[in-house]
Image (cartoon, rainbow, N blue to C red; front, side):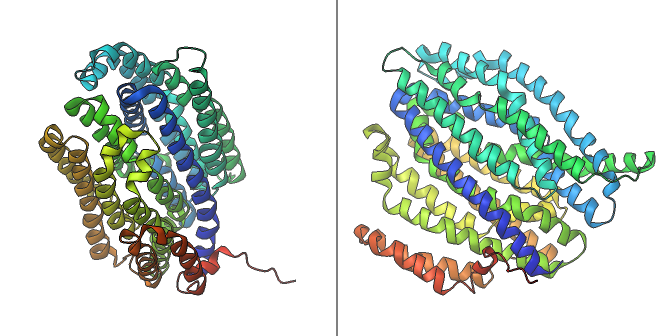
Length: 496
């Protein structure tokens, strides 16, 4: 398969996935706005802490299979061992189902302790905080299985279930349900557990549909040849040797994104935690874009590296990074310039988070400029190095949070996360380059970065120039479409 074909395939899947991710990110911002406006800072802080604990537990439940169930199917197909695909899925999925049930019980039992630790001085919200955590515990297995089953479909290079079920259906249902809970406050007294049910309930229909999609993908790619017992045993051994470090790294990676909310709640209080969660919501939007693109690139990159095609792998990595910078750097620069207006939408009490927004946006410029480097390292088989990097970054974040949050509150947590993000991108960047010769700084990346800075950088001094910056950026991207590889998004004409 040529590099051009790989790029076009990544572009088609990536465009749909990024569009879905943009929708999911946008609905997430609206959900955050509703929760912040309706519940108030303390209960909103408890809600954000509860969902952070839920996401962390769900990441642990997946046991790192959200990478392995893409890496191994892609590798098995590329090396002519497609008859082992069924054994691969049976190796990865059942342990997740069992472990997610165990963690759900643990979250239910530990809910009072978590609530007391994160409520701090807001003891009056502990009961509702506990109930919210227990509601989320019920849905934990569904969340873990949804993600794993959709990962299976991506392992078969099928992006549509992820886009339609997770990005569109789940996020859309969450928005509708949370909006209904918010509207109900006009007539009834609603509480944190009600919002928790509204936020988590969409995982039920999505999990069922994801199971159907994964089964269809498996049956479509079913190979009649049987695998031997020794082959299956060897595969299981290799699968978990690869997955073990990635399981810990995946949890640590999620901790980088979520544990800071819990730390701010425990060390600074629920109100500062709400300010921090609201101020950092745009980071999740950008992470969705990164995730959406990397999920499309991931199986193709795994195949290229499995067959030793470094040129194709480097082309994919650089092209995808250019697209990521093109999409995300304007958002970061706009957020830096318009932070006060952005936060005022959530309420006057949240405008204290302006420095938080600017610190995190600066770090995101560095992170997105490195592209999906963490995934590239994992697809190169370096899961142990990946684990070490994430643990170092997590240590940096927690250490700085413990030192800075009691004094600076949300800004201290932002400083910790910003430093951790820089570490977690520059370390793997050096390892990827040294081990494989791959790097993200191709012509497209450099062009997209320069275009974004030239168009949106001046807004720091003249905010009203945004009316000129946006059309100038679109025009510049069109004129530079060859260097940005934007033609990959245009379907090829069929010849008769």
